[in-house]
Length: 159
Image (cartoon, rainbow, N blue to C red; front, top):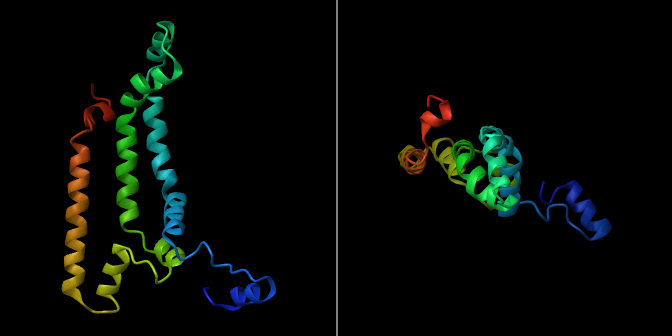
């Protein structure tokens, strides 16, 4: 807790504060990455594992470097997994309340915090409704734009 017993004791004894990296945007970003990284890694690993080894071997036999193999074969073929993982983590991070409240304190307010406070503490239902519709609309547009780039039949394996 900022200005709490532990922080005050550390300030008195050592002249250093325990809340240095807390209550900042980098702390929130690091917390969100830590929490939602597995949701990105699993689709990413599945997308990379779906790339046939024969394509990589053929490119290597034809003289392609490791960088060229990654850039020309692995990255385009694993793009559906990358996009699915990105969309999944994006949607989950939009609704995160705990990370921003714990790591950001009251100094940094994310949109989910603002929506929650509009509905609960402020009892300002019109503001909460407008913010909710804006959040759903903007995130829906982003997800729709990303899904236009993804071939879902390829991901499911129908082809």
